[in-house]
Length: 409
Image (tube, rainbow, N blue to C red; front, side, top):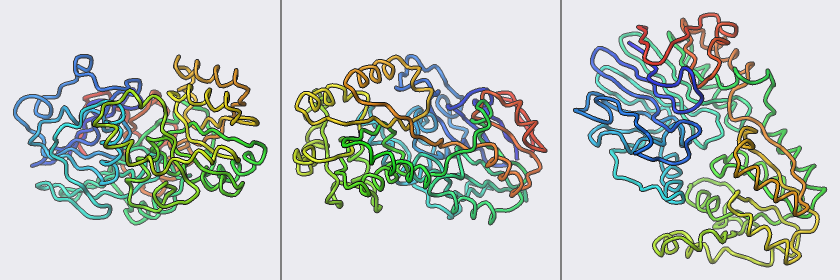
């Protein structure tokens, strides 16, 4: 087999990996660059012959998870090329598009199931669940002619799927080539806080405040569960913003959602008043039944977005914010963005204390080393990193590539 990282050897996000055998060619992940937050065909000039333009020469595209930097450009893929996505990742992707005014174009999408192999000519691709901050993230074992490649996608070992992820890797065993993320290469060697420990820390923190506002990704279901449990332990009502509630209601799993949990209600932010009639009929009207203004007259925890500043100011004016904190549970890098800076400054002006409580969705260095020790790969190819040279210090058999450089396994 041959491996070529079309994009991703020198950047975090927007990674595109090609794997080819004697008969087949596949792509793993096709997403936006990390700093892009919308799909703009005029701005994004990325075109790949046989994938997005010209006669199709790729047999399939596999998507590891629903984050935009891994899935955000799939609408550009030629319609005759099948795209394989896990079912709930597809739901999250399409809901995200609807809420961010991106058209859900008709694509050749197929849902894969974990642990069930997919045959593409002489390639066998088996998806396994991995531990990441996006719900139901996948890694892929690709096999052909006695050779085995594992593409981990984004991963960690400190979340709620950590144990399942580790058991899968132990089952997979020795591989010829490991393609894995190196996000943490550019960060201090800090060991990730376990998700269960974050939940305990949140429980202690919430004791000190009557109102707790949570700023986190709506697709980070692990974190949502952690904060819900911490809130419940402190007898607080739990309020989900419309986007978060729409995601939780549409995932057919037992997670905090207004449709099934009596202590979970919905807040519909003012910004959605500007949405189209079709949007309101599809997403707002079904949620009206879960609104409950009474929850604000006792202690509460509320999921929020940067776009909800006017809503928070209104609650303050009505005397419904007295002793409050905002828990920032996202990557620190987002604080460099002007919109985030302005939002947090306004929050502080309202007398709301900002507290960071977060753990990364990406592997720390100990997890990366454990990965190598477990799989004993002949070659390790780092992607999703701005400091790939560090791979030579961490891994025994690192092979540092440049974009579009090809290697035979």
